[in-house]
Length: 365
Image (cartoon, rainbow, N blue to C red; front, side):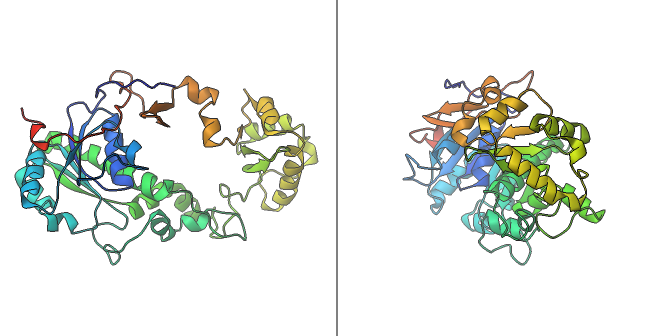
């Protein structure tokens, strides 16, 4: 596991980003841009050092302090914005306008600026000014209702679908697209990235299957929501779990081979009426060995059968270790920069700063 850091490098080297400090997907988007070599300056209010749970998200940044209720500090931030390529903010609609840092003001000072706005509900609509969290944004999209077992409550998928999958990833996507477009037009623009929009986009395949009659609103009865016995998790003899995703016939055959189950003794793989019997067979069989014994049996096969690891166990997974997928920065194990580039690889991010940099000393050239 790598621990050393290197200066900013990567495909976004030379891109300057101003991040107005917030929580959740906006700082995550800034982190992703910094990981790819962007020069990211985080503007936060005084007194936030040394940070706590959010501190690992400060990696790869320069941090300045500013009182965004003080006109003198606002003017200093606008001075940074004049020299920036991108601004990221994650406040409710209208907040930066009231600060004097809204898009009209920022783009007047810097017409080439890409102004990235991250919210849950978007910049307009009847719920635009409402509070919310990941679970709320995905509940209105139908996504949350689709996650869980038949006859049971919906299960929140941590905060991966709204905050990060539908939020920060789509904000970064929009920012990068706007930077590409700016090469032709010479002009910046405003990105309205809403988690509710991103979550809908992430669920495109589900909407497609629903539109073709291949997905039911009844939770836990479909291909990817534990409705099929060959796409589920199973408890092993030691109380741990294996995950199987043997959808294609050739992979399903490999699964049965590893489980030592005769395919001729089973009902058809994909018929809804077969699933109870298949699930019973798989449940009983997986309970005969430990998780690690099953992992060894399926190692090197195309059965799409893998152990369910804890976060701690994932640190030692041979594949993750071989790719340096996890790194340690400032004593915290966290993801390595992704994706990977052949010609302009990113370095190991620098640790989170422990002190603020003087705002007047930045981007002075």
